[in-house]
Length: 433
Image (tube, rainbow, N blue to C red; front, side, top):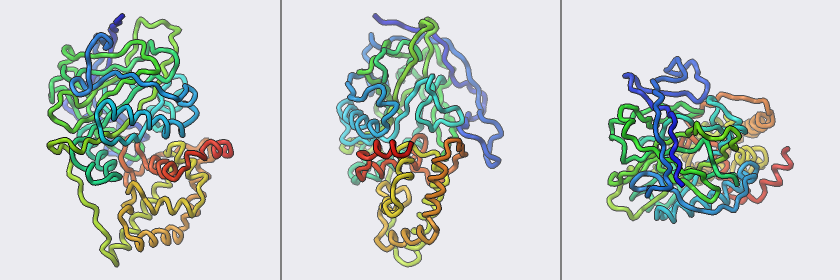
């Protein structure tokens, strides 16, 4: 039986300024003197139960699908290696099956549980977060295109054209159905475009990106949905950005909502959201941004300059090791120095601009790392990771690969998994406790 919810949600309100938000500590160099800018409006809305509706990704921008997962509830909290290997593979297959994508790169996930939240508004790069109770999109065309360029650079050139889709998959990870703090999504066909959209600047740990906020001016006509009693074998797919301009469903505004009538002893909502880029290389016409061809080494001074720039980025990234995800921290703690340098020089994701470098340039990077006493840098990073009370201010935008959930630490984790480290994580975890 369908159950609609009448509740209050937070919209943006036009006040003549461009909204912004800091999800890190501000520095004296920041252009803003406040943590937040822009006005909000609390609006009462009716959130309909989507189970009684026919709602689809390409029309409405979201869709509920069924999929079993082999991960237990405990796995989601205690086994990051299972999430990044097994769960990512499950979700990638789900995206392919549902969207028809030829290739999928899953690159980030977030666990949410209000009772186990180990983060804050000033630290959103933690393993468990609370609920985001304000309307937002996670992206914006500019940020989405940058993300596409970063991700597609790992793939064959055939995936550099066609269509791409930045998408989320949201799942209840508990055996108990969700009865409060649901995820509400807005039917994009009910929006007035572009009148209802407002660009919001988000300043995070080492990045600044743009997202879309939703204005309240036409809120009376907006249609909101949630899916009642979501079970663990159900997944809500919703778009962050679709490059195909012919579709009515391209971006999903969403927010956590509270049901005023939910029982007070309601179990806490436990969920995971996963982000990915889907590739459709056969799509016509091409709707992807133009990829700039990498410059090959010209030899001589150009080789030396490229090597030194890469080393500078590598050293800089290790200054902010505390922002790395758990798998990447294990990589830093446990990988022998020689193997670590090899991983960095290989640069399989091209975050240090070394992927296409010639052998001479890569060899020079190895030499510069050793001359720069990279071993001492690694020792300092390991000491920082072993200091449980350490809190650092993150600012490494010059080496950030994609921003917002895909910091340089994900690169390290990816390198570790690529070379078979996933089979050793449990052993290392025990040894590092």
